[in-house]
Length: 247
Image (cartoon, rainbow, N blue to C red; front, side):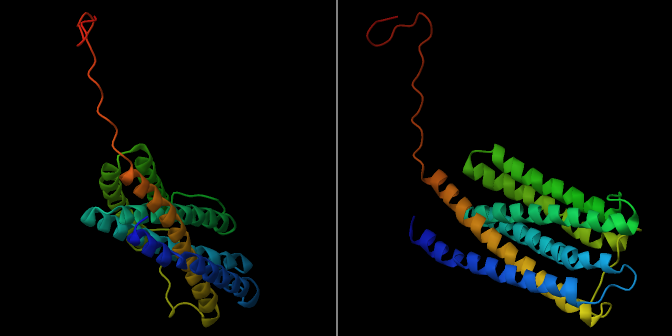
């Protein structure tokens, strides 16, 4: 690995630090959300899942945004490091998106009476998950690095178009999902655990992306440094004589 790869390794050593910071913030934030913050006025203790669900949603959108940025950098520069970063962030985004839907279903059952309904926010979130899974599948079936970079990055940019639709779905359509929240509409006792958990999910995501980026970058470098296969020898047609005169 060259000097660029060594420098990247030194930079990505921060992924482990980010994982530790994220886990510590999650532990503190979730402890406060479960045991310190008061119960929500209407939902009671059921509402405590929001201290997990809402930070996951925020972090998921940020990870998908990072994937969009990395895809643009990969298309602009053609460098494998951005291609690897795009795939790593897509993987973490899919993980967060799946967790988001599971958490939402667990919350919906006691509040809406069902685990799933075709609500605009839920439906668009599920569509985005399917789109980014499709991006990862597309990358797996393309073996040529340059073609995979171009097509995978274009697919990621197109898939990201669904993210702002998810965000604005509660404003554009009638929905069971709660509308936008802000510090002005949330009690101070709820803000601190939400923010701690949100930063925990963000730092955790940075760490996971860093770990996968390291592994994927090495795979890309091996592919690019692999020697080209020799050209295939011409085949003789039936009845055609070779240089030695044999048929």
